[in-house]
Length: 161
Image 1 (cartoon, helix red, strand yellow):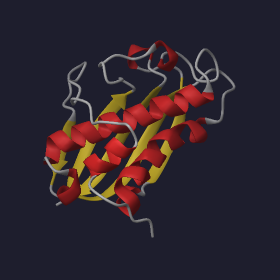
Image 2: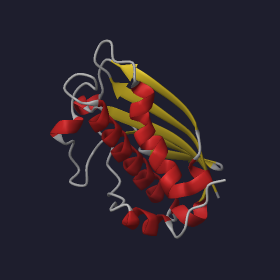
Image 3: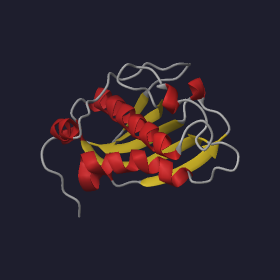
């Protein structure tokens, strides 16, 4: 069992991170849907704190984007997922029961198959911030293109109170 000390905000601060402002949708969809005790978060790309995709997080992982930069991009996606969840429930500490599932999409160069390691950037952050409540089922796929030429996109499902 993995326990974590302090609040989510305190853990973010210890990691030198902060939840960004929840990003507005870029097309005809909503950023999250709450249905009963589940919150489904639409795919979040790797926007940085400035609300933009950094040059090192744009393009194909295994091509112009290194696997390490892809993993950092996945971590940013996870932060953006949590920002949407915070907008949906208002208090991550009291409301989150479990991260049920993460889905990762890696903008992969032809022949790049190490997509699971890239997605660990998102998975690792969920566990760092939520402890056992951050452990989740997961799917990771390499894709030909992503919106805004993002290197990574992550979607999620959470059980909440």
